[in-house]
Image 1 (cartoon, rainbow, N blue to C red):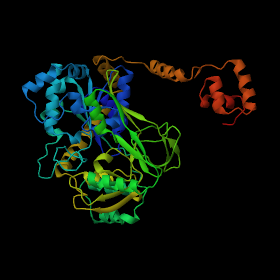
Image 2 (cartoon, rainbow, N blue to C red):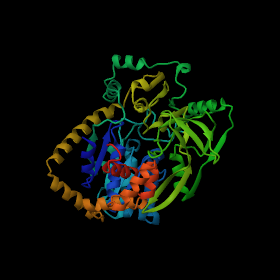
Image 3 (tube, helix red, strand yellow):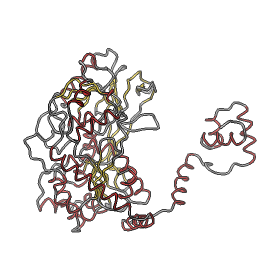
Image 4 (cartoon, rainbow, N blue to C red):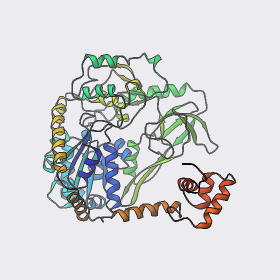
Length: 520
């Protein structure tokens, strides 16, 4: 199934399980659907099983959203208390669409408790109280989480624990989500490496694949210093980052995290934020960006090095591509019904000599050094390996027998998911475009939103553009051509012309072409 087909199914209001291999574009589809709903006056509840995934999406954890917190069981008293909480009633009661990312890390018990809260608060007997529920994730990746009291970062379930995955919950079965298994690939650009990852996913990893992986074995002293290193445990990560920073003799600069808003939400944001509360930097420090900002030239996972500090105190980072970026504070926040509940602010950076596999989930890395000799859970090795785009970008220090294995139960379940997705694709393909459009519009109307025409959509976008460029897409007055010609002949730069005429540089260039002052 393609991304566009999955998006069209989401727009019908059907419950959906959105899945696919790492790099298939699940987050892209979620973002596109959220934008579609917001344009029509519907604010989706965007959540995730972990704080890390939640901050990637700009949402909150499902435990915070539902009020469940760290509960492992839910009794009548708990339900009554949650149903009488003003915040929970407003949040859950007003919601129309609930999106849960990284659903593989939620147990069946968590799904059941969430279902109970939604039904109780919304006073409706349907699964999840009648919400459109959108499960997002890949069950081949990290499984449900428990606290074990060791250093294993959120503590993955040990092998001896009987895992009941989210899809085992009666509420999942009752919700009967349409499976949308995205088959596209937007991360791995190396067909050979993609074949290796697919072989792990299908439990077909053999000696040929092992030989290919083995070609990427390196000694620690031969591994590229600039590439981030992935480990299974926090202790290894902290040790390497501290040691590497200490080796730099330059003066250190300390950047503290600021916060405002609801204390509990702030703590949740801090746990999920990849930037630390106390960030220590030096000239020469290897860093990784922790947030997307395409306009500034970086995304979550972009690697670089601190080359200096401006008089303002902010660091200048030179990325691997050679671009220099002055890095200012970024914000992570939780918004609810148009109101900011909590915000944290920190430089969107972290030291990048090393990180845990858990923290790497959701990232795309050009290169990485991995020590997978201490992998202790199904899917951990697969998650780590699938972070890099090409086999050439992989440097392995070692592995163990668990590295290339996936959970046997998920193997069987994955086949049923693929089949269900193909059946869904064929069924929706039979619906005419006109009927599908009506279904989309009916769901928006039933959810209290407002359907918009193409003309209204274009006008809305024009209005936003004209906030910055008042004359965008407006006719050119005749006397403007004379002034434009005169200024351009006088060597006035395009950027300056754009400011003078209140238009974008592209519009100025197009006008100059029309006046035969520039070639196309």
